[in-house]
Image 1 (cartoon, rainbow, N blue to C red):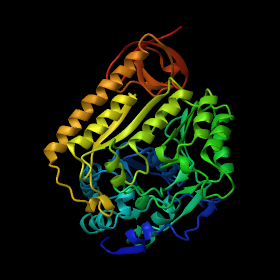
Image 2 (image 1 turned 90 degrees about the horizontal axis):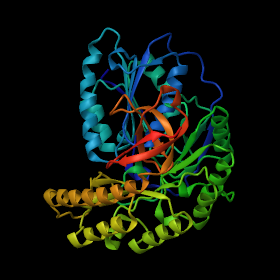
Image 3 (image 1 turned 90 degrees about the vertical axis):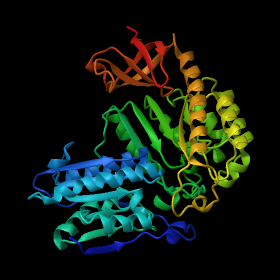
Image 4 (image 1 turned 30 degrees about the vertical axis):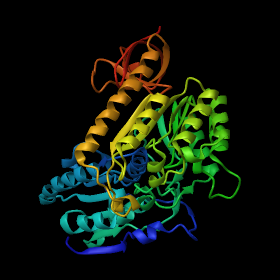
Length: 475
């Protein structure tokens, strides 16, 4: 199928627009008849938790259509690559994976191949995929998942390749079927999109306008999860602090978090927060509810004020550290994790030292560290960058060393303590042991039986490693 049917194409210019954009709320009440009599589907998801949650909706839709999930791509009737565009490396790996799928089109029963997610929202990347990888049947935008089955029908009916990737779709669709990846931990979307427009970030262009789900829909979903026996809910958004700002009804994230906490879910988390609008009210709510985990992911990205200004981050090194102090004044034992970028255009060695200083002063429990990766279409991609790859790599290694020091120091404090651990299952590294996460989001390995999976157990921590803890169940 070399002919292409364009329903919607992305536009960087349109994606930048935030003026006079209204949010559309839809509720799906009828999914129609089964699209398939039998068969299998395969999904490979790259990137963040938002993509994982999107995968769960796609899984629900395809299961309702008559397909079963498979981990063997060779058997699949429908194949979906759910992509991430935040960094260049992930995108380059994707192209290799797409290329490998071409041989499957030589089979008697040719699969329908779909590429979804943030990569296809980029104009240049989409054109490359359309022209170079002609075995792809459907290109589906981040906000078009509710049209997944219709797009498959269209391909089957027209025998054309279909592109449905708008940059201005602000629909929030409720009532879609969801098949969750886990039986005791759940992601719940509260916001979509982002309006912060950090100069290095592609997400505001690929995920669209910041928009909030209605509170009653969120609470209904959370109540259902509590009734089903879920042990942990994570409220999701590109910037959860922005929840409710577009609803014009007085809603805000702190009040929503409190209402969800009152539903008596054993564990409540949220991702991700922006330091710029992290409120005192939110700190107060976190401190008052024992089922809100005392763990916070708070990206600071860089420690130098000039670099932060060029990044468009809207806070300073000093205000970030002041926020950390306020949080710890209310919650002394809270674990803080973060994201850090090194080698941002124009960053000097002296400015990089400010980043190391923040790492030392905060003492993070963990950190995700990255070398700056230019994203086409973002302002930072046009910034002058005279720092060599070698220099960036050297800074990255120095940062990694410093992060390992502070995370080891944090983990060492847990040795000898008893931690409540939600058991995920058997360890990927040692199948003879169970693994799970503490309230402060540290991975723990310990001996135990399969009957403990999905339960919260007490584990005494015996010793720590860089990225995990080892312990024994307290009888």
